[in-house]
Length: 184
Image 1 (cartoon, rainbow, N blue to C red):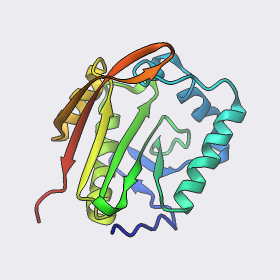
Image 2: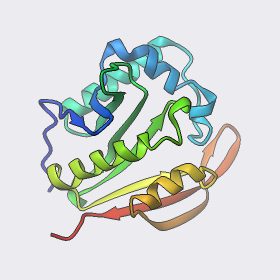
Image 3: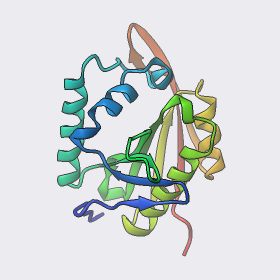
């Protein structure tokens, strides 16, 4: 079974980015990412309505990380501490060495390769340090940018579920993509 330890929190660095722990001082940025309609367009969930909800979310992810059940990185530009997005692993299936990856990015930075750079660092960490065998992504089929990002990182489509997700009085479809660990 997968043995995880996210203490101390693993800070990841790329050419342009620092991926770090999300702290209570990031509540304003987390609130924006969890309430802005452009960010939530394909996430099919209710927007956050207060800073308190953002703070509660941060508490939840911090507790999950302490329990080694999930990990969420705040994405920042080097030399700029404000979070511009998040990326992480959750819905871990430790017995199967599998986790789901999820990510959001500030709309002003979409389409500039930021999430691709963050994803490559997080996938490397997932396969090399966490010892994951596979990573899954659940995507709204209308989210063309996310599908392109996954394909660019060699994810393959595993499934297309018709109306398997209910939100706000409507049923939505889901695409499932996955990536296996590189062969050693």
